[in-house]
Length: 424
Ligand code: FES
Ligand SMILES: [Fe+2]
Image 1: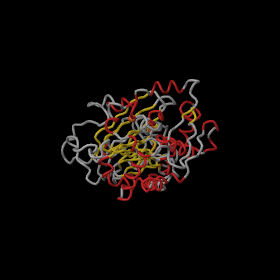
Image 2: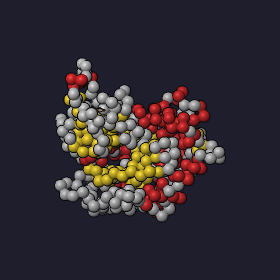
Image 3: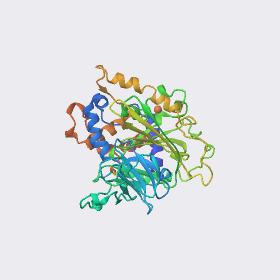
Image 4: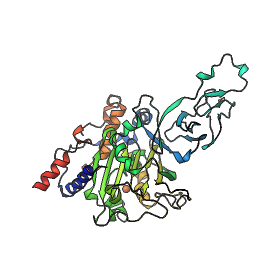
């Protein structure tokens, strides 16, 4: 993040703390329709358009570190085989044999010289090409070159592996836009994986994710934890293209930075600037990534639908390369030591998910009025509708497109208003 951006954020923090209403010109946010959390039609639209067309963070290179390694990944509801090719590339295919559709690999992960289907022994190389079949003389004129595994778009951001089921999608870097540049300081190209755990929750995936997309809940839900240190009135939300967002909130006393020393075994990422060092800085990457990035940890949270009223909550911990020594003891910043339970803050965030879902499914739930503080949720929903195609959505399930381009980064109308405040 460049110096001007940093100064702008500090200016905006003071602006947020001093304002007595939403910023001038900020639109009134119409209610988010209830059915977006409960209506099977909306769930189906998400499946067809959001999960099928966006870049999804799927794996870390440490999970398939050498040529020959593979990983089966099914979080997005499709069977995906991610492989490390003999030439050192990372590629993804549908884990669907081109003979009779069996999964090519049935183990979760491993390392093989070839990828051989268990059903009848068809064998593929790591580029997905069909290399040999059993009893080829019994197939009349089968052209192996037409029977490769079907590939899936797969790109890397440093050590992070992303997939996209849409052949026409823009590149991952285009998708991330200005965030790709901002993330340079976090050195994703050398980060290592400490832990990855997944938990079942009984609520719509957006209910779980939205608890991590605003600070309005901090004083109630996190009274004894986050609220002690986070200055929620100085929180600054930024709205990026493609529905991405960011929050930056300082700690309560500017003189007492968030944390002074890294946890045992964790190296400081020296290139991280003052915002990442001293503030809580969290990015939302559309559709399902939320990550408070700092100079110690790169720990994304992800939310995967599992039906309309259930989801899977995936928590990652990544950190700077710790060198040749053993992996740091600290299993994970989000869970207890053995990774079997969520840690305190995430338990606070998820504790009401099931009750909220039940309550949302009642006749009494009509929609969600969002405050200015919660506007990143609205911004996400606007982007979702554009991705689905507004005309594809039943009118009663749409959100109005009220947040115009003027509120989308790099536009920042609040800066001019901040200078009026300080001049006045
Ligand atoms: S289904 Fe894979 S070899 Fe027959
Ligand atoms: Fe929270």
